[in-house]
Length: 106
Image 1 (cartoon, helix red, strand yellow):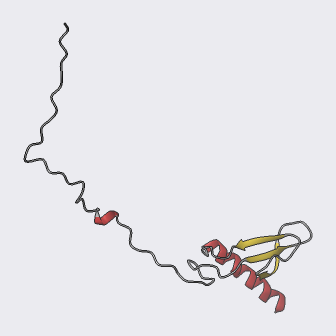
Image 2 (cartoon, rainbow, N blue to C red; image 1 turned 180 degrees about the horizontal axis):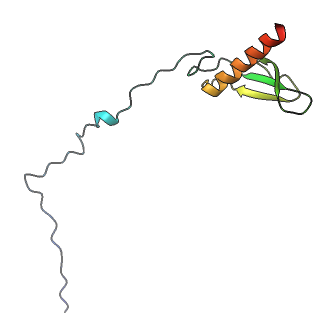
Image 3 (cartoon, helix red, strand yellow; image 1 turned 90 degrees about the horizontal axis):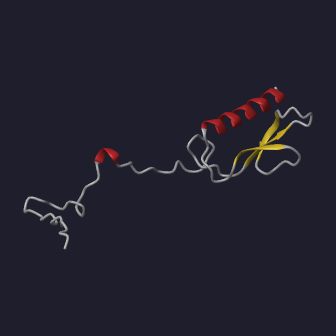
């Protein structure tokens, strides 16, 4: 009969402490609570509605006309969807549309 070696199970000594149930998270790794920026058109806020800008009919793909809040028909680019966060790129696009509208008026 072959003799099998059996590894004895480790015994828990009084110095072993189980900390899994009472472990505190590392304070440096805990994210602070983030608050919504509210609705609006500033960076970090939630867009209150869709924003579109028509593209020129000549086929160059250049945005033209004002920002509108429903699809203008034809070719258009959606700048931001309702409920999404306004980013720096969205804000730049909105600012460019405002400047373009001012240039056409003045």
